[in-house]
Amino acid sequence: MRGIGISVRAIPVSVSLGFAGALFAVFGAAFITLLPTPTSFYLLGLLALMGAIAYLSVKPLLYTLYLLILSLPLTSIFNVVLLGGHIKISDFVTLLLIVLAAGRFVLGKCSSIRFPPATAAFILFFSLQTLSLVNYLFIPSPVRDMQGAVGFINSPQVIGIKQILWGLYSFAATVVTYGLIDRKDKLFRAMSVLFAVSVLASAYGIIQVVGSVMGVDTGLKTTSDIWVAPRLQATSAEAGFFAAFLTMIIPVSVVTYVGKAYMVNRRFHLVGVCILFAALVMTFSSAGWLSIVVALTAVFYCLISKKYNLGQIAGKVLRFIGLAALVAIASGIVLIPQFSLGVKEAVLTKFYGTASMTERVVWMEIALRMFLDYPVLGVGVGNYGNLFFEYVPRETPAFFHHSFTSGNLYSLTLAETGLPGTSTLILLEAAILRSIGVAARRSDDPRMRLLLVGCLGGVIAQFVHQVAVGTFYLLYFWIFLGIALAATNLSRRDQF
Image (cartoon, rainbow, N blue to C red; front, side, top):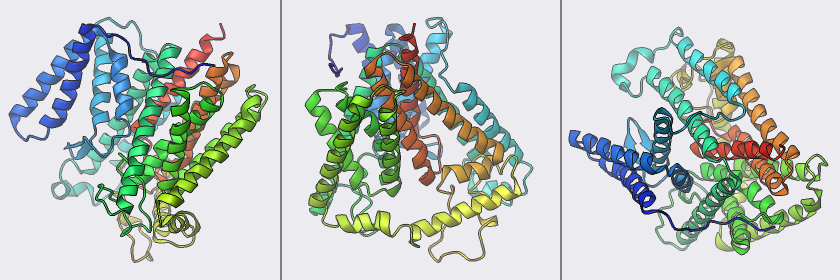
């Protein structure tokens, strides 16, 4: 079975000009927003308008999607501070993609909007989040009257509204991605781009760690003065988030390689998977390791299940995972002298009273206290941090400090949206998993079944990793989700 790689074809001049115009607008916006002058905002608007006109005239939205996928792991570079937060290059491209897609619809160049599966569950979850924000107005809080001290941008109401807007933004990115990928060649090319940028970012991260070990200043922030071993974070802002990103792409990379549905050149695919495993090991993220174990276990279960008709490659997948893991561990031992200490810190000691774990337990206890006081609608989205000190236990560790999240999505959702909100979150996750799983079982195309099973593993990894992350709206996950749900739609077409 031949793989689909990234092919370069002749592109019309008009498309090239439009693509260049939008790129110029994006990078120009990133540069100009650094200049605190009124003129810069006019220039920003002009550049954005030029890019939009160029794009709407030649319709290369798909190229914008590929550009967006390429920028997904670049969270620590090419970002600017705007409206009280860090705006990444992927945010600029996503916003451009959403605006241009909406422009095409308004101008009549797109007759309808296709919504992905599980949309109803998302709307229900989002509605309860919004309702919880309204409920916050009726909760006594000393922070509400301190707007002059904390500033308008950091006021409780604005923080909650920003959370709601970020949720809409993330789901809109999923809808646009889902709508753009309407053919199998586009689907596999999008996955190829995602795989390629993941490997490149991971390779850069490995070089960054090795350079740091050798005494070279590579810009690695999390070093031995904070952690016993240098943790790979590559182009991400934090090792844990990059580990989550890797667990999303590793399952689909493994099953497509073993099933010979190569996303890129066969040799590069093999080397790439080994690099991804090595990078994940070097993040020393216990949540990342747990997520990939659960995800690959789920993938292996699907492979041996008769419902998916993929049992012929189950043994190969298991052997390949074992070999890739050995290569990754051996790479870590060779490249990082403190490797064994890092493993001990990440796994063996984390669950026995270390500062990190003890503090997280207190954060989750605070979330539970909030839930017990407001079990129906919660304290409001984004307001865990605002009410934090009102629920701190009397006895806390000496190293304890304030946090805006509980470090666990499920306990945070329980505190901020109550039992109904948490129930709809679980319903949303179940609906997503069911959509992908059913499509994988019913597909008549073996290559599509492989891709869907891999996507199922990647989504499971993200849901498991949320036990150590206090946010649901991570852009890379929602773009990946759009790709995975687009695969379910293409799979259904095969049945008719």
